[in-house]
Image (cartoon, rainbow, N blue to C red; front, side, top):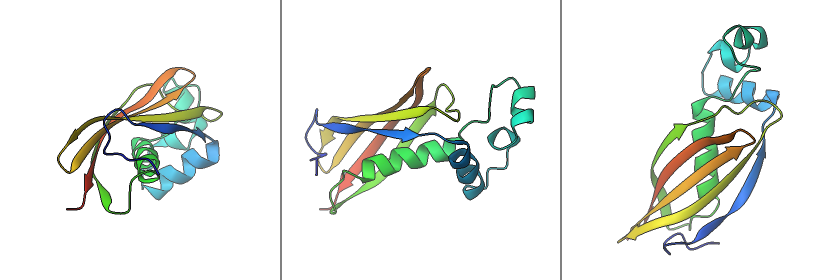
Amino acid sequence: MIDLFVCGAELPPVDIAVTTRSIVASALATRDYQDVHHDLPRARELGTPDIFMNILTSNGYVERYVDRWRAPNSEIESIELRLGTSNFPGDTMRLTGKVEAVEGNRATLSVTGLNVRGAHVLASVVVRRAA
């Protein structure tokens, strides 16, 4: 367990294999029926080399990553994220995180998900410790 209420604490990196199955399944599970998440010919027609991961899946991976390290007496209060480059089948996304600030019972973490093209997701996660 890592104490997320120590400024500067770093979370261990986690690698996530991105597969066609994981992209399609997670898009369907989040009810995101945009064709770029499951239809290869349509994705290529729109200018991408393959189908790609949706934002709800990226958010879920960020949440799961932080949730793995938070203490039982804490909870994720908020996640703000922005996407950069896409995650395509065959990519590996490496998640890393760091505690950037601690104020009272709240810790703010930065989480980055990188693939071979650069940053896929940049997130700010606030974890609240129970009083």
